[in-house]
Image (cartoon, rainbow, N blue to C red; front, side):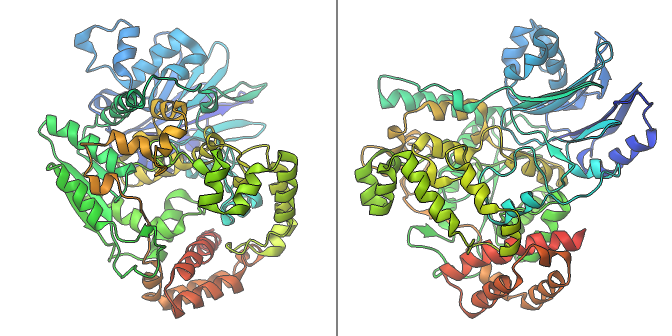
Length: 621
């Protein structure tokens, strides 16, 4: 994905060209195919170009439009055909018109309501010199990111935070954000980042900026999607296959080769299957990358999980002869290097530190092989492969599947449940987290958690319906997943695309009644299983177990024990001691060294690696 940035001098002062150059230089990796900027009075826009589609070769941004506006955008629109029809663009011109030109026409037609009509992954900014109004928008739920900073003198935005930091934006630690990362607090990001003065424009949000006022609002809510009523289950399957195929096929528009991440499961497996089918019609092949363990994982996963996805990935690849499978065991990297790489790219700690080493290896391999577009199924758990959560819809199922305690909680009236959860939260010790108890107490983390029960998606136990549980996973209008993948992609000069996060797919799957996902025998993920009949081998399609990524993490860490000890010692001498429970992290480290098991591996992921990720952030700064 290309990158964008901009400056708006709210005090009317002229733009300092040196500031533009600082932002552009910091974002160089976003623009392997060109960099440009435009200064117009108190406003400057920049564009870093990646030839992600055939039409991107014709892009010239930023630019002034015929109506006198200034526009910059990074975009891949997936409803180009509909937009071309809407704007009466002649057929011979449709293959050449750029996505930014379509956004320009959409703004001319619908004004600030235009985001509702744009499908795909995109963000853009439009400056109106007549009204002195800046309009900034981000897509519904795609793999994009947009950050901003504002003080009394200026407003600045960019696709990555580093461009804002290059302007000298003060680095003030957002302690609450750090705490939420450490305890893996659901729905924690929103507009926050690790920097107190830098904000993230969440998905499905737009903002307007004038010298007098800044306004941010959400233009689309997945939660407002009505339930879809169709005569038969087969009708739901047919409708889903049509929508899902459109989402995958639209993301195959690429100026360089397309590849896919392929696990042994249904999410990336279904993406691979649909992409392979479409590419086969065009005589094209589909490279696929599967992360596999270096060491035995037999004792590090639960009975309903598997730590080695090789067999299932091979069966999916064999089912589609044009898939070229590559097994990556990441033997040239290690978990610590993965943490360093993620911090160099995202510049803030994340909660999934255990996976960064194989993600970095996969992306680097794809880059070396000239891949321009990488498809994933990262967002599928609560959309295409939702289980139906029958335990939330039926007390009998809750009792049978989850035990009597879960059933009782489901039966309690909300005021009683809130009391129960409050009591439990007051006993919360964050045993699975590296957070320092004194830090958690200083922030009154328990109280904040309790205040969120029943008010939003922060307390997983308070979700009284399958639908609410799904929103807690998807985090519509709140998720930071797209911004993370946008930055990972830019660091490797490619675009990461996820059809499971397509607006149409999200709306369709949310509209399907939950009992259709549970299936007649309660096996779960029934809609995707039925839809993939004939597209995935039954050994994969009907498999009830799920893969566990980084299942051999413990052995990988033990192979670099000296380096882990050294980093722990360095973290202990840093500011991180005010936030991290170093004794608990060392205990988790000693436990995984003594025995590689499910329990010690889990603690290595959630306590040791997540804590080290935060600790290395302080060392980096």
